[in-house]
Length: 144
Image (cartoon, rainbow, N blue to C red; front, side, top):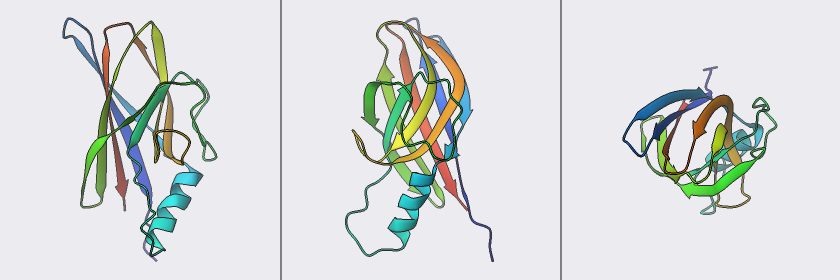
């Protein structure tokens, strides 16, 4: 049998008001709910499948684990990522305007603006951001 899996990552770009950019690569895990949802999409004839194209950020420090279903401390709300599927790669990009002083240390992909199922979560790469900073988050997942 062919070994097929899912692997994803986040590319994070923080842009300061003066135009200075910092880039971060954040590996993630595809969580159990995400795997179940993808398998359901493959195995059913339904128009109710909902794309995993909503990106979220937060400040939880706990390691990402298979049974995660949400961020520990999500903030700024979820953004609807624009994206594309090319071959076995799906990529979604969204942006967050920063207000206040925050340390962003967790990232996730969901299939809804609120609630919904989580596809993937990453944690551990802290990005310090202040008011006026702009965070662009790109999520890529590869099936195969």
